[in-house]
Amino acid sequence: MKKRIVHIILLCGLMGGASFTNFEAFAQEKDQFVVVLDAGHGGHDPGNRGNGYKEKEIALNVVLAVGKILEKDDRYKVVYTRKTDEFIELHERGKIANKANADLFVSIHCNSHRSQAYGTETFVLGLHANNENFNVAKNENSVILLEDNYEANYDGFDPNSPESIIGLTLMQEEYLDQSLTLASFVQNRFKKSLDRKSRGVKQAGFVVLHQTYMPSVLIELGFLTNIREGKYLNSTKGQDDMAKSISTSIIDYKESLDAIYYVPDPVVTPEVDTTAETSGANDKIYEGITFKVQIAAGSTDIELESFNFNGLDQLTKSKDGDLYKYFYGSTSNYTLIQELKDIALGKGFDSSFVVAFRNNERISLTDALKPNTSSN
Image 1 (tube, rainbow, N blue to C red):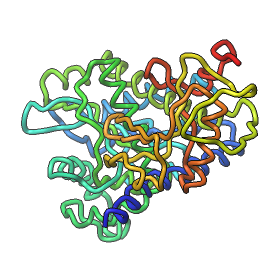
Image 2 (image 1 turned 180 degrees about the vertical axis):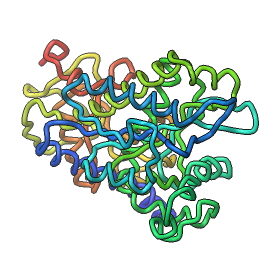
Image 3 (image 1 turned 135 degrees about the vertical axis):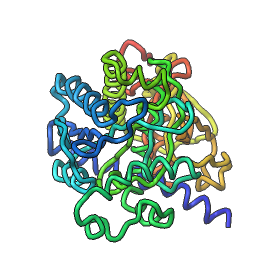
Image 4 (image 1 turned 180 degrees about the horizontal axis):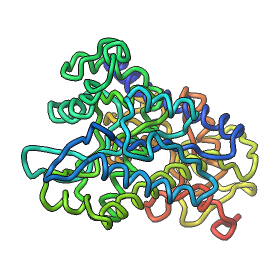
């Protein structure tokens, strides 16, 4: 039973690896990283009206500000599901993203609650873990009731039924790892750069995320029903702050993908003894840098036992928001870490890639491999 559970858990990481491979191939075919920005609600659907504010206006203002920042960088192409106060059906928002062959879909909303709850949270598509997550998704999904012929458009989906959520989750499973990674970037930056309360990365059944075929997140900027937070989100400063934080998170996410595919030199990898680290004449030692092989990631905490990881040892893990990342090996020897990556690949971890740390802080592989940090 334990073996079966482990295989199910690790599948998320391996499926994420397949998506990284898709990204690598697709990156060779296009010059720009396509981001679809989705402002929630619009037109005759105002969203929530906490303290008299309009969710549709705040979401649109933040989306336009995020897009303006990204459009200054030639690496990005921004596509909007709406740029004005208009009503766009949820299934059309997904079609816009799919037609654009987007690399990311980011939907922006504001939260509400009957209490003075406050804080940011970012959702990926999945089964709701509790009634609170289900209620957030239900509120956002209920917009379909404003659409003409919604029963046909959504195959009889009922936003008020928890059972209807189960059928939504399969389409986004392939992109779960990347979606969780982006969501963690967003939440961590809200907390660190803006000192906003983070309510974490969560999973719930959002129809708008179900419609897309790429990594997708739904960001709740905060609670309009909270007197202080609602006032902040309705202000120009608050909207600018949130837009800068989100755009930086998107850039960080894109650059983290770039680092995965940065290969400075082809390395010939002889057989390696993983129980000892010896430096040969051709080894590349990077003082102050620790290299590891990331072998999997997912939302479930897995015990670091070799039988859980197809016989690999030298295992470590980290928690980034609600995302657990699992690593094999730890060395400043870049030649050795490449060899360890090959071992991980041979054990079936097809999504394995090398990551780098300095002073226990994750840095890009590009920065780690700069010539002035190495010695032979």
